[in-house]
Amino acid sequence: MRMAAINHRAVGLAGDRAWDIAEASGGAFGPDPMQVLGNWDAFGAWAAGNAPDGGDAYSAGELTCPVPRPPQAFGIGLNYADHAGESGMEVPDDPLVFTKFPSCVAAPNCDIPLVPGNCDWEVELVVVIGRAGRNIAAADVADHIAGFTVGQDVSERIGQFAGGFPQFNLGKSHRNFAPVGPAVVTLDELDNPWDLRLTCSINGVMMQDARTTYLINDIPRLVTYLSSICELLPGDIIFTGTPSGVGMGMDPPQFLEPGDLIVSTVEGLGEITNRCV
Ligand code: ZN
Image 1 (cartoon, rainbow, N blue to C red):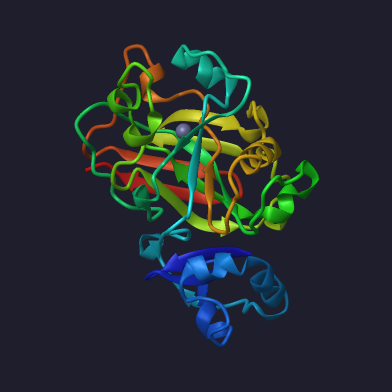
Image 2 (cartoon, protein in one colour):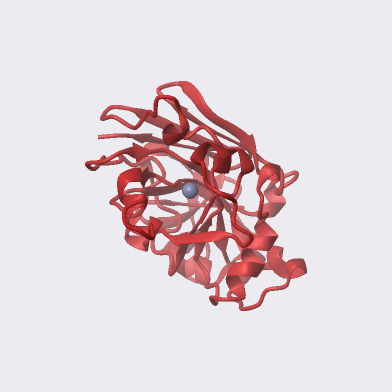
């Protein structure tokens, strides 16, 4: 199952076609994608026997955010060893967690308005929670995940590291600094959901190219850790960290400029394309 959104209505994707979830289910699910995520187990059971295999043609530019109002949006820092190295920072024992405030979550192919400072790119695999839980056991993690999607953790570095005790949150929460999509993809769609290639190119030049097997804290560890502190809720998203190749790690550093085109991909999940303005 691939759940996306068009005109803010939840749709299922079948190849290059999209079908409206509220119409197909007679109003049982949707049209709000957050309502579908809030009833994810029941929706999955219904879709297994009833999902249409056709629909209407659509274009990537029509897609709106498949997780438009996550109750909580977590980010994980320094979760690939090579990226921690280029950042010049020590890898912490426990996951380094910050917030991307939910108002920055945006459509998969939106424009990104740059702000004063040093705006940088970070391709990431994003986990979407489908079933609430506290103290989730590692063996149960997959049952709590609605699916994966592609995200850009756009980051303004001066704000991110400002202050004697840097708080990453605000530098990563400007308008449209968290495009996600194109769809929430269930794990059964993926041959090996724990080993996916992710890439980011800027103006056609490959800047990041890694695999999620290189995560320091893997996805089960992140879900067990976060749920030991916060109740995870349907529609929560977790940006799982970015590999090396971000602009601040380059010599000399390189940051986003108006007109730059960011293309972010995760194997099996699709790609998102964002124009800086
Ligand atoms: Zn990040």
